[in-house]
Length: 391
Image (cartoon, rainbow, N blue to C red; front, side, top):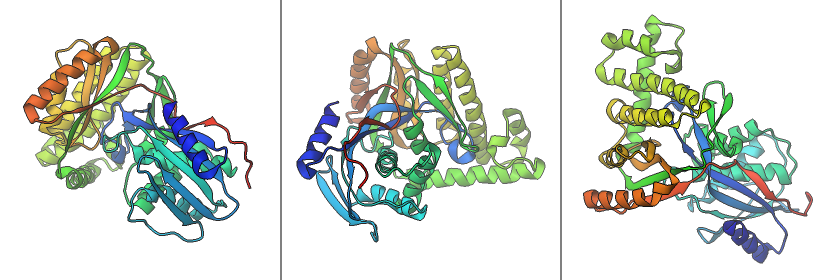
């Protein structure tokens, strides 16, 4: 609430109007890593770290932005705008660009935004910006765009204008997130299903390695190539298989002798991860968090040994949790080679475990890890209506 009040106050100070207030969350992905670009499943949740938007429509075609976190302003006109070297305005201009391309008529707007999503921790602050703005513009200009179309437009804003070829998960969970639930997204059909995750005694805790190895980008592209190579080989024997989504564990065993060892391990991990995710959803349906957590550890093992996208720091953080009965599960989260581990920890043990992890990690790597305690929250939503109708 403090962030909301701060952003609203700043908006009134700059624009002297009563704004629409929208809250747009970050996200975590509990299980299902590197499966999205293989047409598989992911299991994200919206969290209580978010970006708040204060926004009103204008009668002209000028868009005035103020980033509270950067304490920086930017202005552009709807008829014509270009990529900004400042960086942050591009996520917002990309949304306007997509609305224009889709034929939606909007005018200018005044907007102040800011929040508490840690930048660079893998919690998708960029998706919170894009999805939060498109949700807000859809409302103040009465565009009538359905939720899934908002997701697709927000993703395209990042793909096309910002130039980052992200998958659809981050924008999807931002719009569809639901408190007390995780969301299984089928990255092939874009169908979704909620599963209960409402444990009052458990928090989702992120241990940030504070390292980012230079391998990340090139190795990510390499993994995609390796998975595609595996699919092409499998197609020769099973023409119906258009992606690793169409392959199961038993089928993979048949191809082991036909693939080079590296390609086999990559594909094996993805196929096993899809099966793990569905087992994890079954565990949630019967409130078996111990089994769910065990599957998270298995995922990390696969990411580290078979997919080889972990690093020494991530492996060490996961290892630190393994003998603690208060930790249900832990794994690296995101693209890999740095970033965070995601951990399910009992609330009464969080402070003790935080101290233990900080001490051990600093002793090993001479780095103070950052630690974020989060809860599952609703997706993007209106916090307060504005009193100004569309102009």
